[in-house]
Length: 94
Image (cartoon, rainbow, N blue to C red; front, side, top):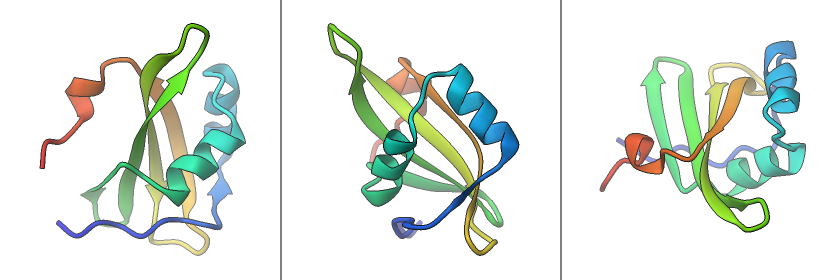
């Protein structure tokens, strides 16, 4: 499956903004993942997942940030975002 392009401009849904606040994920983290995703995947027509492994906390721990985005809109619309320590569960081996 072809790699999806980086996203520069996007819109956050109210739900995505709520979940970012609740899960303590910053706008800068979203921008960082969209600018240079480690992995992308189309989950269905018009919806994709952008994800990257990022160190968070002190002491630092690796988390996988996963952003679900509707790419069939202009600008693309972030549906939800979360982080997980279960990197291997979601990481696709090439």
